[in-house]
Image 1 (cartoon, rainbow, N blue to C red):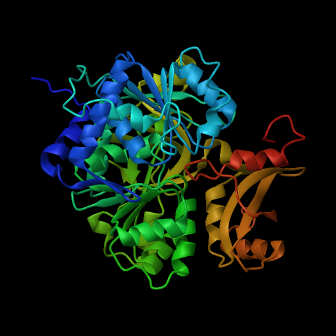
Image 2 (cartoon, rainbow, N blue to C red; image 1 turned 90 degrees about the horizontal axis):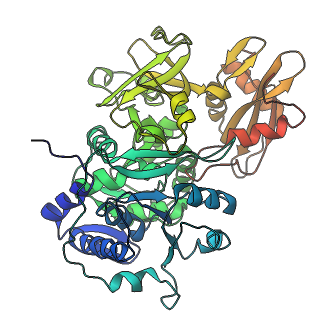
Amino acid sequence: MKVPLVLTDFLDRAVNLYGEKPAIIDDERVLTYRQLNGRVNQLSRGLESLGIQKGDKIAYLAPNTTEMLEGFYGVFQLGAVMTPLNTRLKPADYRFILEHSESRVLFVDHELFQLIEDVIHDLPHLEHVFIQGGNTDRKNNYEQWIDSFSSAPFNRRELEESDIASLLYTSGTTGNPKGVLLSHRANYLHAMSSMHHLQVTDEDCLLHVLPMFHVNGWGSPFYYTANGATQVMLRKTDPDIILEKVEKHNVSVLHMAPTVLNMVIEAFENKKPRIEQNVRVVIAGSAPPPAFVRKVEEDLNWKFIQVYGMTEISPLITTSELRSMDLDRTPEERYRLKAKAGYEMIGSKVKVVDELGEEVAHDGKTIGEIITRTNGMMEGYYKNPEATNETIRDGWLYTGDMAIVDEGGNIEIVDRKKDVIISGGENISSIEVEGALYEHPSVLEAAVVAIPHEKWGEVPHAVVVARDGESISEEELIAFCREKLAHFKAPKSVSFIEELPKTASGKIQKVVIRKSFWEDHSRMIN
C-alpha cells in the first residue's frame, strides 16, 4: 500500500501530539496548534467559497506572520499551489509574476499593499485581493473574511505526492524571474532530511528570521511544524528585535543569511547583559570566512551550522555540521570546516565536476561545478522548458556554483560560476579574497568583484563597509590582503560604501556592484 507524502500530514501530526502547545507567537498573539489548525480550516473554506480548484495558484505578499504560515496549510488542503512573493521587488516584477503564475487570489499584508496597489487592476487572472492586518474596517479585510467560515475539520481534496505544492520565483538578475515548481514529495522528503541534519525536536523554539517567501523559509514551516516546535514570528529584520525575541521566548534556533547574522553580532556586542542560552544558528546564502564562524561560536557562544542549496532543490543539500571524526580537531580547524558547504545530506547525491562532467580530484585545489541528484529536485521552471533543460541534464541539476573538494569529501564553494575572476589567465575566488578582508577588525562587510583592466583583462576590486567609528584606507586594506594571499589575488583597488546592495534574503547582489564598473563595456567580462 502506497501512502502519498503530502505536506498536510505535518500539521495533522502537530495537532494530534501537540494540540494545546503554543504553535505561533506573533508579538502579543499566541496560538496553539489546535487554534492554528482551526484558522487553516477557515482559510480553506474561504478559498473553496471563491471557487478555488486543485492546481490554482494562490499568491502571498507578506512578511513572517501568522497569516503567512497558516497560508501554506490552508492552500494545500485544496490542492492549490502556494505562490509567495518576494517583499522587495518592484511593481513591474509583481505584475510579471502574478500574470505569469495566473494567480487567482492574492493575500497581501497591509504594510505592503502600496507595493502592489498600482498593478492589481490590469491582471486578467487575479480575481480577489485580501488585505491582512491593519484597519479592520478596510475593504476586503482578511480577518473579517475568514471569521465568517467554520473552523471545523475541512473535507480536503485528494492529494498525490506528485502534485505541485509551491511555485517559487527566483530573483531575475538578467531577465524575468523564473518560477520553480516544487511537489509535495520534494518538500516532504526535504523536510525529513533537514529535520535530521538540523537536529529539530519538539523542544525547539524557532524564530522565523529568514523570510518564509524565500524557498518556504528553507522549508522551516514544514519540519518545525511536524515536530511541534514553537514558531516565533518576525516582521522586520532588526538585530535588536531579534535579540530581544531570542531572550524573551527562549529561542533555540534561527535561520538567516550571513549578512543578517553580521548585524546580530554587532548588536550582541553592544548588549548588556549578554544573552546566556543555548542557540544554534543555521546559515546559508554565501560562504562565510572562518573568522565569522569563530565570532559566532566564541563571542556569542552559539552553535554555527552552515547549509547549502538553492530554490530549485527545495533547497538544502549539504551541511557543515562536524562529523564524529572531526571533533578532536583544533578550534581553528573546526572553524575552517564549518566555513565550508560541507557534505551531502541524506536524500541528496552531490558532486563537483569539470567541464567534461568528470568528478574533480579531492585535493582541495581543483575547481569544478556543483551538481546534484536529489529527492528535492524541482519539477521544472513553470512555462520555461528551455531553462529547465539547461539546468537539469541527464538527471543531474547544475547549480552554477564553483567549488573544490578536500580529502575528507567536504565541498568548499569558491564562487558562483559568473563571479570567478580570471586575471591574466589565473582563476581568483572572490570568496577567498573576501575571507581575507573579513579578518581585518575594521571591516564589517565586503564584496569582491571583477573590474576591467587593460593589461590583465580583469582584476579583483573590493567594495567595503567599515564598522561604525572605524577609519581605514584603501592602501592599508590592500597591504593587509597581500600579507594573507598570493599578490595576484589581492584586490587592486578598494572603494568604501555605507551599505551593500542585497536581496530580500540578505544575499549580497554582486551583479549590481559589477554593473557600475562595466558600464562602458558590451559585456561584463574581458
